Length: 184
Length: 184
Image (tube, rainbow over all chains, first blue to last red; front, side):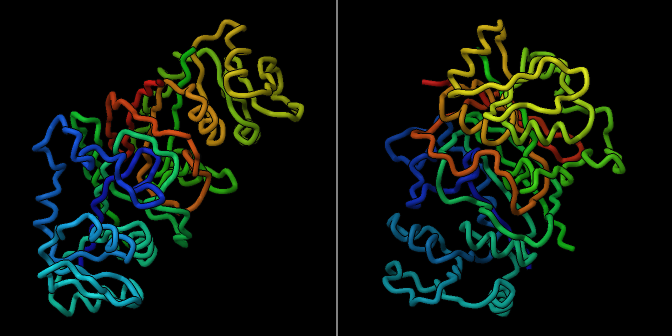
């Protein structure tokens, strides 16, 4: 199973404000025009490559609050609470419980081979469990000071060396770096 | 006065382990050969461009513990305690007190125009005081999980937008990004 992280992060390491808000992210504000509106930073191509998503409950609730549900593929939500009020007409969102490796095993049994792991807590748990294969991090040129940290203060139990595959700068100042994790 | 930050940081945002250790930084271990021993990631050129350094007491104590003192230029240490046991023969290390802007004013009166601001706490204080002009951040391809955070959890009082000037990747996987801060 390949598990990938694809996420935008402020230069000071946050993926959202404390309340989950993404208003600091250019393009998140519908009133604001991006200077390269057709640029998607490889998002579409990445999304095409994955079979399913895994996210925490907070990320799920946040995405649901945006209105229309963006994902056609299976989505697995790490939660102990029932998934009430599912988006209209969407039938492939599943609540899952257990350790990251239990969850991966459950998802693998459904035939999926490439997962998109999303949300700070979930990414940290999967990193700690040696389950992440690659990180695609898009650095947004802003400091927001406080928020939900991508990596947090996580006792990984060891260092995790990364292999830098490539980096790309965009006109708007985004810098995307692609790292591979060779789990030992 | 121009205040610059030039610092190496792990992909998860740490500049040192909790005890100040830099053993995760390639090249910090004298037994380890870098694959590009002559590459200095622009350090020499940067150091040539600055007039003086400002650092916190923890950073000062750490650098002093390494043995030979590396800086020929004036160094200003933010501390309320006397600087005892100064390196042999070094006479241009000064204790300074006060707010970041007080400190900058004191240093400006000595004729300095370009400062290198070093150490996590000091960088955060200077950012908060709108005194940093540029950030040169070298991302080291490793996750260490816990440590001394470059940006910490800092109430900046506002967002600080950055202007991305350039990024450069190195063979060993370091990615250096140069950001300008336009203080309002």
